Amino acid sequence: MDWDPADTWHRHRQFLESIQTLLPKRPDAVIVVSAHWEASQFIVQANPSPGLIFDYYGFPEETYQLQWSARGSRELATEVSQLLKSAGLPTALDTTRGYDHGVFVPMKVAFPFSDIPFIQLSLHNSLDPELHYRAGTALRVLREHNILLIGSGNTFHNIPVLLRGMKNQTGSVSGKNFDMWLTETLTTQAPEERKNIVDPGFETEV
Image 1 (cartoon, rainbow, N blue to C red):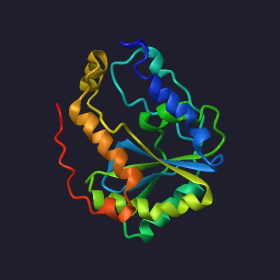
Image 2: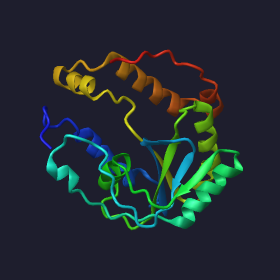
Image 3: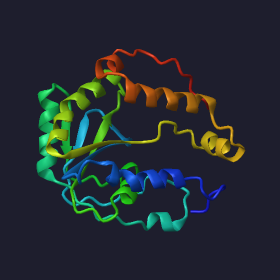
Image 4: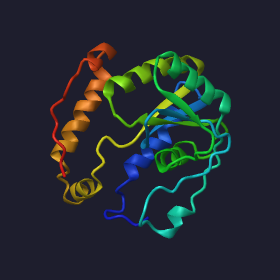
């Protein structure tokens, strides 16, 4: 796509292309929690051959012709579902859903020729932090089995404000401050400390 400035998303692309080099070894499977799928339960994608869901609007025609031939895994989906259920979390399997753009757009760049299974997991539509913390705790055991867990979504998603900031080199103060806080929180604080954060105090810019 043509962007102004032309290098608007170059840093995103470069980071995604570097993911495999940052890992200790090639993962045997990837689980992606997409910010673009919310449901009344934690829904686990159990479709062995997911298609692509072009859940965006008003973009150039070529963006609706993208292809990504990743496969799913019913076995892994069932394991994910069982882990969530064992933690007392509302969970269900979906055998028909494809990959939404929160999965196939970044993963197509990070794993363009992937021959490993990808499983998509929804958010709970309550967006309750405690509920999602429990889900992450239940699934972290999968990391010991060489399964990569990815949360997909920008830390700041007000696109008009984001692009306006890129053009005038000022950016969004609230977005930048939140991103800095999130990075520091995730990289320097212990899990229990992060869990006890009630409200970081950031306001949403519209």
